[in-house]
View 1: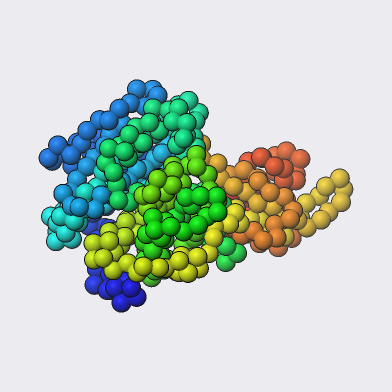
View 2: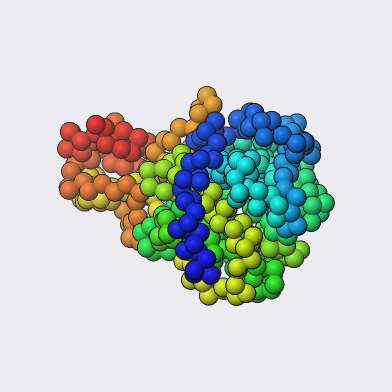
Length: 395
């Protein structure tokens, strides 16, 4: 495996492969059906595209199928409407399949890909996790109360996949254990029972994740995490794993200064390509459980901003304190605004900041009561001459 991973890394220029196939018509965090329909129509070169049903609000849900190979891969993205990074990477990968390259021909000959690129188009428009009925589709895999959940399950039963790829985003709060590094990409081989045992199906997912992790470590060392594997049969990944199909959860997370997730997008693409190379070459070892378990777990340890050694005057008493701020992603007139609000006061032991400012004892002032309060906009100044606007120093 080690030799083959190095071969992928050294012979295949994965970063150049991404640049050659990047879908340039989509970028940023706000991705709606209107954004991707022109792409779907463009790559519908041989009747690969179909509408399988509608969302709560009547938007079409598309299925895109391509390839003639024996191994069947089922991929779905934007089950949560505000999680668009993997959707972008999925279209980058579909562009690769249309590139005419030897790699594309090999993938198309050996795999059949069935993709639902936007399962929750209503949530995408609203920029919400839930669908239009305020239901989290990733907690509806048993009750199947929502049309989107029913469609995902119906395609699963009809397609009978060999592998499932469950594509998501995760928030900037997640780090790789206590390392101080962000969890740029995280994986999970979901459990199939309460005991979190490993059967043949879960083992296949584990082995594939171990291989992808080994490749990604070449690019973002220490920035790959492992998601919690507590069993919840209401989650779609746990359900499909329970039904005997190896299922892999992808979580696209934060890369430094990449709030639009354009860098993370590249690493999801690299993970996808690497996984299919492993499967195509049939080089996955039979048991890489230790390698998988050695991927550090995700942990909530980050704020977007941490401010240290800030002097405040509270009821006539001066003291030095710390506080943190976090972006809220707010949809305004069709654009996502990253607005910073104070999220934590005083005790920040064990937490890291994507941006850290040393106030060096500067006196805090704002337009209100001159001390930081929870949920207040992160607009303030230090010593009357260092101004912070929306969390950042105003240049």
